[in-house]
Length: 167
Image (cartoon, rainbow, N blue to C red):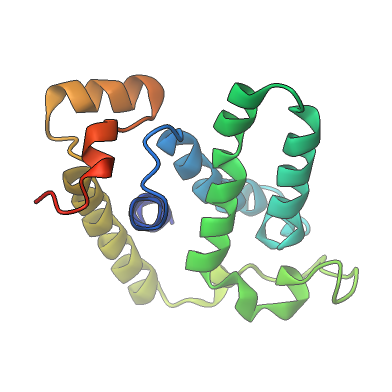
């Protein structure tokens, strides 16, 4: 699945943070990474664990001491990983989600998507597309200048994010 995580990550970022300075492109990257990496590599679904975004965030915080701009930009990826866990329902697989706290054996554990019927996956992708389009509307990306800023930097126009009643 791709559109489900793109749409939910963008919508969740808009309604939770409304931070014009975060790179929303990196949030989306973080939201699709677990399925891209865990789905392409045979073995343990490490990025579907709670430990993965926490370890990445801790490593990022340590490696960027004194480099605030790099830290701010990099934090978007673990935030995207957290969004993936939320919108994938990863917490429903205790063995994977709580690894290594619930035990070290997750070698053959399935990631959450594998048990969903195709009709549910298709419905989620359609919902993700709708959320993506709606997010573009909410973020004002129909306007060329705002769209250029977003595509170049991943940032939103601060005037738009400060106006919560904008229609």
